[in-house]
Image (cartoon, rainbow, N blue to C red; front, side, top):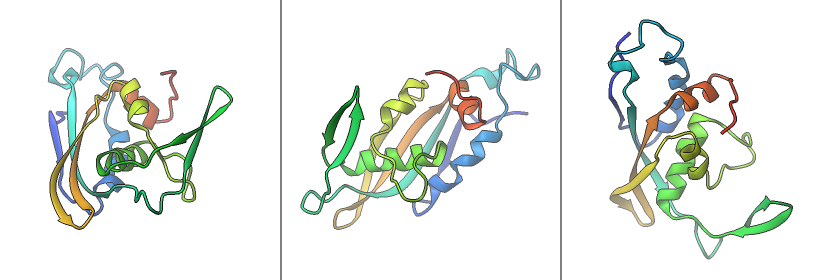
Length: 150
């Protein structure tokens, strides 16, 4: 199969919910038909989504535990909220009750090279953000249930 070099998902209302479909992409290392072809080139997804930064006035301190110590996380801007939406669409974490937060580093450890940029302001405090990331073999393997150490 021939895979596109770039995928543009321009449905800001619900684009992130379609990211799970990437789990069905073939892995170049396991498919002899994809080895040494254009399919081994890095594929990039550009996803447009609505996002709103955390409201600093009504922000409940989010806490994370690292090395046995609790850290308070600051409110996120719209770009970081959008990155978290993408991360949740790719690899859900926390279920329906616990929201996913600050997962850019998690995706970058898989080689995704996540980038986010503001496209336009659509309402007070609400913007369209384009989140771009590379689809790596590690990401696909993790999405397919092969939980590799990253």
